[in-house]
Image (cartoon, rainbow, N blue to C red; front, side, top):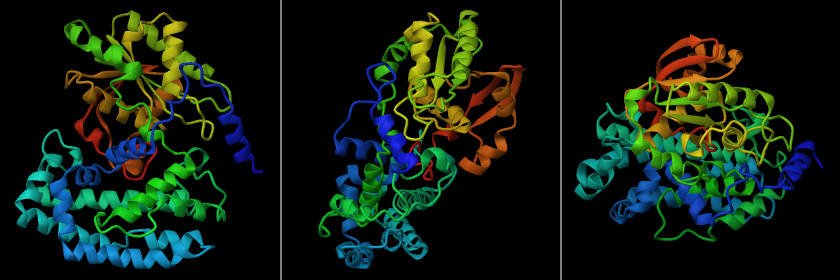
Length: 412
């Protein structure tokens, strides 16, 4: 048994009795729905709107494309032993197909009033694709489709064909490369034959969702809705807040993942919490956001944000109603991006700065993080970043932070 599988076994045996427990198991359909809504808003809209599904099924070009894709994959699916790389190649969207569908969707938007009325709200403000807000709806539609296919292909290649993600130590597949047992398990996740009522994108999408299920990578679906659960009390407190009393909306505390299995909160995370608690007591902001997901070590059951809130409430005496968790971020870049998303979802006042409170080393790192954001996210999810002290940086969240990231299915 490999070291990674041993680690997975150890993690699965950890007690989940504390506030650091994983979210209780939820039905598959609900998990898939949450992942779909967060990762592929366009496809989620298609699934939710009967008029859109009818318009898509009425397109003979889209139906022929789906049939070709099914014929490409069906022979491999029927084989007792199938090379996973070949099967993934048969499922993945090809560049020519992506372009063709993009053009067909644009044509449907122009020629079909019902389709246009159903899709339009996706790009209206507040848009689910804020980075495309300045584009015509037809262009935004094509780009959203390209994002969806990029995300599906990414999931298939990483979690079936063992391609390398950005951060292999924490985000890679749970299976050995070429594991002979993976293909039969995937076949059980897929329909035996194509349904006449299924959407043209159904087979690759279901394969991608099945790949995430088989790998146990449902991180994106945990803790939803984000304004409930451990965030219900602070969300309710927003309406009672006198914002004029505070220079910042929130104090953001980035997580620090413990590297050892069974360790809930390491010394660096505790230090960051203490720094933020001191700034909270000094009246710098009415709320604290602790940010960090299930990150270190590989497939950990421990959520950094949950453990930091627990430490702040139980050991530092910060009121539970003053601490929001942001339980999805896997990197420093997404600590800032996801906090901007949380502020919008909870309806914090717009146009106000937040204060990032962390240790001096990470604070310096954040000051130079813009290039990494551009490289990994495609943009910088904040503006006007400024150093306030050795352990504090100020910045403003931006609407573009709400853009789904198709290349990170664990925290899209």
